[in-house]
Image 1 (cartoon, each protein chain N blue to C red):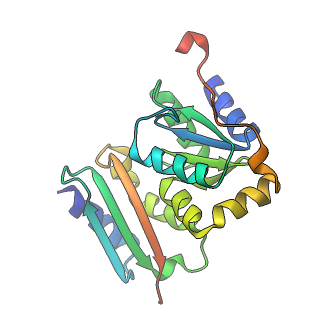
Image 2: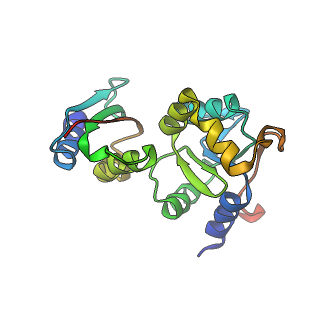
Length: 78
Length: 125
């Protein structure tokens, strides 16, 4: 399932994440809300934080698995 | 650089606030584009919109230029601010108005009204 694939990709990009959530917003398997809280975001702008999430999900973004993506990032304590 | 890429770059560099979106402000075709547009309107931004739907090449060239994979994309004074989530978050925290003021000057609200520009040549449309 797509949500599990996203979860796996995010987990390998953010192994130390405090929170890592993938929600299928519509139930259709292609509109996702992802929430990531990671110490990796510390000191980064919102743009850079979202860029890291986009990079982790580059493949499903490119191959059309993700039709719509919403991202929420938060700095977490290491 | 292709002609199309050059025109996209021109919009990014020349327009105070460029919004690359699905549809137009009058006929928005996607929820995320709508959220970005609303956030910009609330901050009083002079929005220049580009509809990326007429040709998939627009989105490809844009993402190559910006390094950002999704639509919408918002640029202020030639610099990528982000997509819908970032712009909405910045609007809610009040930071968006600060960014606009810093980059465009304190009178940015008086600038040109909302408009739409086309990056395709007549032959491509």
